[in-house]
Image (tube, rainbow over all chains, first blue to last red):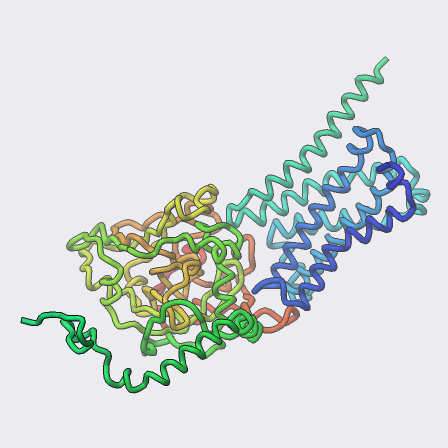
Length: 205
Length: 332
């Protein structure tokens, strides 16, 4: 049943529409004055939260595929990756516009001065590389092996994202949510390490 | 001897039981007002929404606290006052949760009466005082202060209270008292935030004696014409307008006079990020946030530029002399 749904061509469209709901909710919140006394802060923080969530969803695809033996999930991996990039872009835009007033020299100074901004910026740069090479022609151009190697950068992005969040929250010692995301992403990365070691052991002659 | 009977309504043992003639004469008007009031109550939910939408700066529900306008230098900024609803739903009060909307949701459990303040340490006679008595030690004044949070936002709030110096003079500190430490309420029964191990409870703050004696340091009992809402630190808090907001402890239960500089809560939890002084200073950055500018809550649109943060939050003329010759980068 689930497999059939996942195989349908409209499933991808459905996923993208579903994934854009938080964005639509935030946009409507601006106009309906639903974002509290500090809407700028609200938008910066929630776009960051959604980036982390989509990063988790993206990294969940492979374990789900292997554990459930459902190759259908793979169809959505690139979509989810691009959606992660979309929320990261919104996050960076909100910061640049609302916090920095689009003053580029100020932004450059801010990246240089504050480690947690620098780490977030590095993650965003890596993520945009992956988004820029997320279409079929790019895979052909790079070759499947090199493309796959490049896209392993998503593991580094996950680590940078957690570090960014951790440093941001360390100003107020408020780590509970950081630990939740770190736990989920840690489990997803840890499973890959375990899985790689496990399959290598099985394939040994 | 006066014998009380039920025969008529003209014998009263206490003169205060007798309705004043002017009230009796106005009884019809009173009834009209009451019925209008009842109708207004029915409209309240609708009207409140309307008032919120208009950003009305007036409160509706707490006991009023009469006060005269302050004549202290710098105490009456003419900037636009932050809407009451913003000042009462956007709070940092970790005892009630870390989210800024948590205190407004959770602080209703705080028990503000009876309330005592213990004055201890290096004073002539350490004593526990009732709040009602402490409230009589100075004339209530309204002061409109800028409030700058260390996180990079600010508000303009009409506080009510009297200079902390009035209390200090009253309790007579000993000559070797160099600092004042403020201990705030920490009750695990009523404060759900205490379960989170962000900092050691109770929350402690402190001032140097000359800072505490400065007329702008306000012992605060109310805001917006009323007693303090619980999420804003009822029933008594400190407001030190030239320092970042966290220096102004909420729901104070103890005032302690000491000789050595006290270890205050945030400086203890994250010494690389928070110092003892925490004066508003646009030239000394916090590692997490730039302190050069601030967003005024409830003012302007999403795309408006942030305003420049002023040295000592704009109170430089009044307080700069307290720090003459001090390295404010080192003493952040």
